[in-house]
Image 1 (cartoon, rainbow, N blue to C red):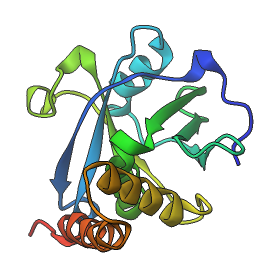
Image 2 (tube, rainbow, N blue to C red):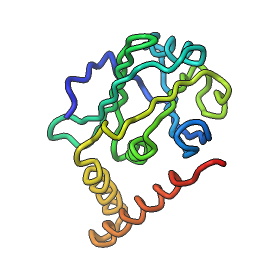
Image 3 (cartoon, rainbow, N blue to C red):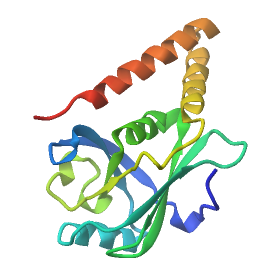
Length: 183
């Protein structure tokens, strides 16, 4: 479970994408969150100065509200070069694949909408890479995500048995992409 996530710390996710870089994440595709920093100037400042300073310290926490499986939160407490705390709220039904990808890639890039609404628009603009350590766990994630997929397939007309099989295949196919690396 996550501690209290403050509404003022939740940064809207305006888009997403991926970048493969041989110098980060062993060349795996790493997700990019395109974030709206309008109400979070400290995060924009952090992204801007990150390209000119050595990496800072960050504490990473995954969580969810008690008895609620619809949303997952990722909280990043940056200690330096700027001390700030931000949280991202993911709707499991719509963005579960993104949560799964970030967890399995063990990293994420943050790009401000100030540098474009697509990854390609901000490819040479400042962005910050955040390592998501394996110690930042999210208990029951596999079950939460799988149940969400099963529910979606059942709503699409699949039988429960078909939905379970479709969810298994969905997870296997989506995770194949993470294995690919750049040379």
